[in-house]
Length: 77
Image (cartoon, rainbow, N blue to C red; front, side):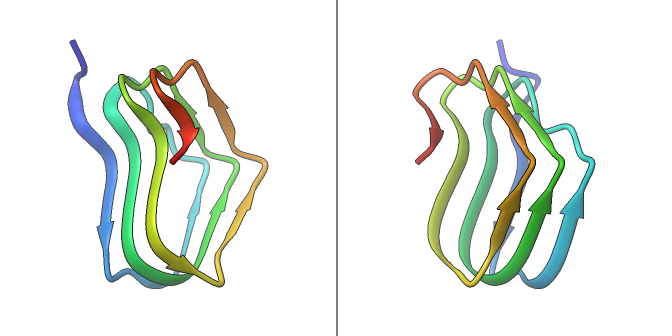
């Protein structure tokens, strides 16, 4: 059973950096909707029930050196 629904649930989040976070053991590690100019660097997104990253309308963003393993459906959806 997941410990949380989401590690991060971001809606209309802009110009932000997320570094060195653990978004593991949730239903979905990171859910992002309607966002731009984000940086996700060196985060652990592992062993989530469904998706590691679920992205919808995310633009001009950087995903670098993240560990995304063992997620139930997709690493990135």
